[in-house]
Picture 1: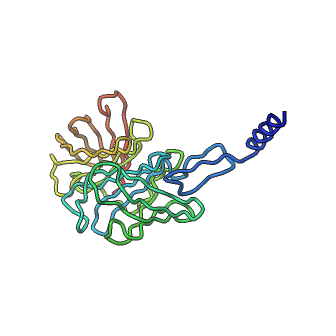
Picture 2 (picture 1 turned 180 degrees about the horizontal axis):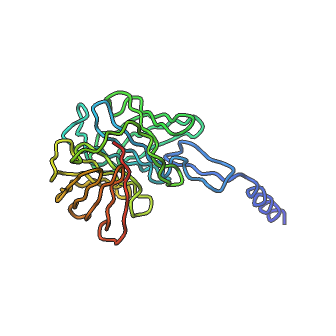
Picture 3 (picture 1 turned 90 degrees about the vertical axis):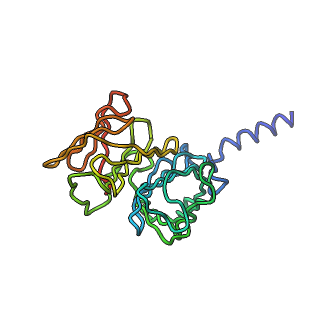
Length: 253
């Protein structure tokens, strides 16, 4: 009887304890709520480095996976191959808003961006020494509810007759799949475009053709994905990967 009373007491006491969850190797603990996901989950940060290379970091899930994309336009981070995609793990402390991305779980080995700090608004992510190339700040383009935010980049150049050097991005057709389109700066009207997906951490080089542009609008075809139109600051696939849906992307650069 005493043992039963003891077990019952322990059970009741356990119900009174706050809910908690650890992530990324025990980097921090959240208590007192039902949502035990890391507050970085679903967020996406993007921007360009001092050399003009476009970089995206997407925090994908609660286990610590993150991914990285950059424009395949021939430019490189000093000492590192600077293109494609990476699958990383991270740890983050919600109290200090500081974290670190230290190692890769797949793909190219030996490269990770290192320590980072969020501002109090959580809209700017700054790496103290990104891959050994110095400080880098990225702006938030999607929030923790997986909702695309207003484009935070100002002074966007007016679109010229071709797409050279432009970047377009948004959550794609798949749930929570942040998709980035980076057009090579040295392409012509029948140029190349790197398509990056966060859901499976992949980057593919595609060719676009039949492109024409005049008076603020254009159209063309991207291999494998399908036809697209461009109007002002929106790049829209009219039949995204053949799924029968139109998916718009906003101009980032």
